[in-house]
Each structure stands twice: as structure tokens, then as C-alpha cells.
Image 1: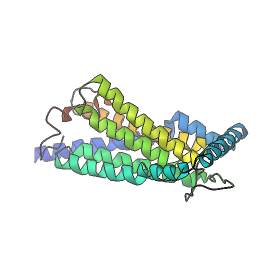
Image 2: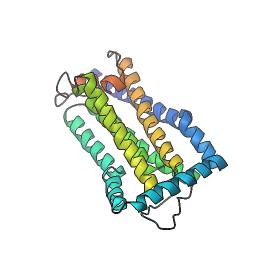
Image 3: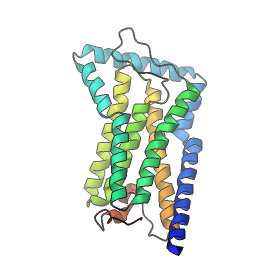
Image 4: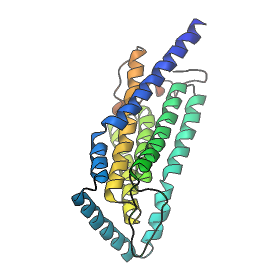
Amino acid sequence: MVGFLERQDSDRRLGMRLTFAVAAVALFSAPFVLLLALVVSSFSPLNDFDQRMAERAHEHTLSQPGYGDFLNVATEVFGPVTWRVLMVLAAIWLWHRGRRRLAVWTIVTITVSGLLNLAVKELVDRARPVMPDPISWAPGASFPSGHAMAAATGASMAVLLLLPFLRSRAAHLAAWGCAAIITAFVAYSRVALGVHWVSDVVAGVTLGIATVAATAAGYEAWRRDEGRRPAVPYEEGVEPEMEEDGGGSPGRTA
């Protein structure tokens, strides 16, 4: 009974940490907040820059036969649905391996990312680019880019979950490099297809990274509160002990 109550108290502390982390993202993500303010105020230099870049990217895509079709497929391969499915599968595996609180972190982070994106889109309600010869089409408001935010969130989460199993610094750098390349490609593809402004995708990437950073920090604060050794999430992952026991054994709740 005592052990059960202790676990319940620990779960509540983790929930509070993640909740505070989410609030911090919404309030204190400086690059995103700056872009949000500029977009909402219709800052002319930003609007002019967005328009120029959108036209150039669109023209380049049209000039390459088949390039638009490739981008349409690729941007969906690395789209929000893909990352959500991958993170749900990861959470199921973690739960089965006994890493139940890490599974909760995974679901909370990917869910919060999606909900934040929808909330900001509704709040800002920015119109998407309108091109004379459309290559692609996307529903809803434009700011911030859901694809870019999902890629930044999902790729960063994947690396943080994999880091405990990567034994060398070179492997760590390669993992982060792959995440950066995927995120940058998705962001670029949305502009090249004419469905987002540059500021949309930059805002999506920054908000996605901020979401993961905040929930990882919340998880790390919970770990220290539980008396576990301090860890640096971006170097060791959110739960470094996973590698030590092969990901945890069934029945563990670490």
C-alpha cells in the first residue's frame, strides 16, 4: 500500500512538471513569441520578405519537372500523421518494457505539440499564400506550419529516445544531424509548395523544439526530485538508464 501511494505521488509530481513545462513553452519561447508579434501586427518588412521568398521558391519548384510531385509526396511522408503514429508506437513499446512514465512523456509531448499548433492557428488565423499556378493545397490557417512543427517535435523526440542506445559522440551528432536535416527539408518543402510563408515554418520549428525542450526539462526535474542522478537530456536522452537494462523489463515503472 505504501509503495502504491509513493508511485501515485511520483506520478502526480511528474504530471505537474510536464504541465508547468507546457505553460512555459506558451509564455516564454522568445523566438516564437517575437514572430507571433510580428505576424499579428502585420509587420511590413516581414510580410514583404515572406512574399519575395514564397514567389522565388514557387517559381523554382515550377521550373523543375516532377519536383512538385516529389515534394508533395515527401512532405507527407514526414508529415504530422507519420510522427504521431511513430510516437504512439514508441509509447506502446516503452509501456510494455516498463518505462511507463517515459511513455507518458512521449504521448504528452506529441499531443501538446499538436494542440498548441491548432490553438495558435485559430488565434492568429493567418491566410496562406495564393500563387498564380498552385502546386499544392492545404486546409486551415497558415501560422505556424503544422508540418514543420510536427517534424521538429517528432524528430527531436526520436533522438532523445534513441540517445541512450548510441554509444559514441559521433553517433549522437549524426542523430541530431539527421533530425535537423529532416526538419529543415519539411520546412523548405512547405514553402516550395506554396502552402506556407517562411515565417510560418520558422515559427513551427521553433515552437516544436521549445515544446520538446520544455517537457524534457520537466521530466529531468522530476528525475532529480526522485533522487536519480542528474542527466543532460540532449546529450544522454530523457532517460539514460534505458541502455543499462536494455530498455527496462516488463513490470518496471521507472
